[in-house]
Image (cartoon, rainbow, N blue to C red; front, side, top):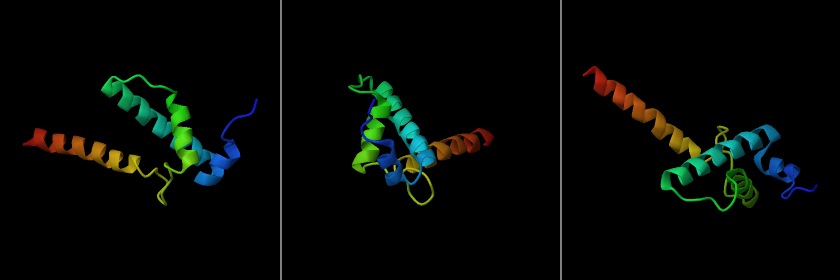
Length: 90
């Protein structure tokens, strides 16, 4: 069975297989969550879509080791609970 795109090519774009797996898994979870929130059915599996984004160069790892889109989402997610905690103390 031949896979397209080849894992070796994807790993070269990202830097290592470890980073590739983490990047694709994180992006696939984001895709699935967004589709569920919007109530839209997916045409293809989230992992396949994430792999295509990596292969096309749309999804890359920055120098901190996180993908360029999710770093902003993580910052937003961590700032919201902190705001709620400070509101509870007042």
